[in-house]
Length: 226
Image (tube, rainbow, N blue to C red; front, side):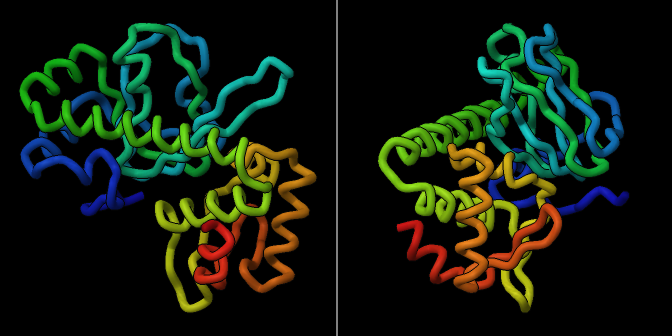
């Protein structure tokens, strides 16, 4: 699996200067994770961070009712484990590889030293955390103020922007998510997510495959999300 030389826009590595990026890529130890392997587990007591190189991972959290909520998705260029690194508290979420993944595991003290040497990386880390909090806050607002169809359209539009692969047939989202996991991002039950996805498919807005969605009509999707 080749390590990319460019990084998706908005990821942590993308926001760094060439010098900061090169220095970070030299930290820690390389590690391969198989698809389905847990990279970090909720409640474990550890402070290292993991720099994703070639990756697609999901961030989940256990709920009091025994279910699991999907909080976020991360790709190559992103950093995971930053909350426990900053707080010194146990992990607040589980990170699982959705595909075979390459990463670098960076000990907490090495990362602290790096941030002290590269203040721009410290600022970029703050921006990354703020953006994550804003995304979570917007989802909470959507949960309380909008219908399931609008919320689904907004999440799909966001995923297409962040992780989509444009092609002649539309924007492909091959994230490996189940309909239940997508529903947890939207804040609905799996049956509701399935029904709303079928409605979008029947309108020609999306097409669906096994754990994959293609946004066929982006204009209509954005209109539904507004």
